[in-house]
Amino acid sequence: MRLLAALLLGFLPLALAAPEEAAREAVSRWLRGELSPKLEDLLKAPPEEASRLLERFALFPPPPEGLAVNLESPRVEESRVSFPAALGEEVGEVVVVLEGERVARVYFRPQGLGVPPYLLTPGAGLGFLLFSLFWTLLLLRPSPFRAWLLEAFSLVRAQRGLYFLTNLLLYGLFALGALLAYAVPELARAVQVLFGGALEALGLKEAVDRGVLVLAGVIFYWNFSQGLFLTGLFPALLLGLPVLLLNALRYLAFGFALSPALLGSAFLFHLPTLLLELQAYILVTFGGLVLLARVAGGKGYREGLRGLLLAFYLGALFLLAAAWYEAWEVVFLL
Image (cartoon, rainbow, N blue to C red):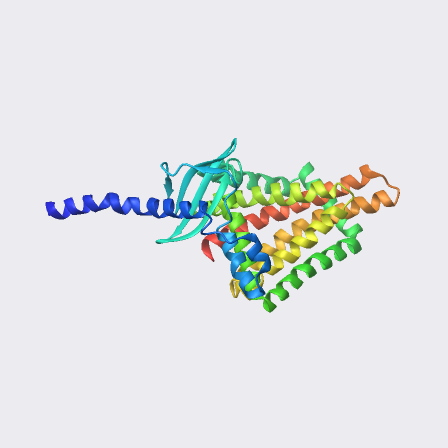
């Protein structure tokens, strides 16, 4: 019995060191350019080969020139091994994602990119639950929040023609992208991996392991801050057209990467998420076009801005509902 215990203790450091050694070797090869395809090869390759290279490009994006990595201080967290890194004065980490003994992904993540660490704590998840319940309560009782909601619905009814056309255009582009994926599934799958790599680098996938409350809060934070605010409200302030063009490209790409051709039966589970989230971005696009119409009609920028902000507010409510459903979907259905 003592001999067995001694053998186990002897092999334990080797077992624990194995992920670190595999990750260290992967980073060394990545820095030497052995894992990442060259951009010129990707551009010159025939369609089938280009799809494969694009997928590998997404999994192993080329290291930035001048990146310095400290391979002697790894941090192991389940299937991820991180090494401190610096790019000039910008610090960050190189992350290696392992699937068993296989290296699945290597990328550099600058410090400050992605989800703030405090949002991945249980307290943040509980706080988001209380925030959601409080906002819902304010909508059910007489309050400014309920008044803004009713005014937003009145705006949609008053501008139902413009609202219908915005929905038709953007949902239509999503459907077009989904149909195109059937023609070139390999390329669509590579684009899907590219999107997944971006989410991995931003740290969104780390929230999946933290439970429904944390995941819902992280989803809402990211979709609201990056989708609805920075790439929605800001370009909409420029008389609507920039946000319309941006979301037209976004919906075509989303349809291509999230097509039933790739998701199969899981598409049905994910469909409510898509309808809710895409509707939020449609609303802010609609608000930008209301701003354009009112300025063009001589009603002034201020009057149009109120319409944009009401649509933005309604879009935020759609994102709130989408965050809770998507978190439940990811944790329990997918």
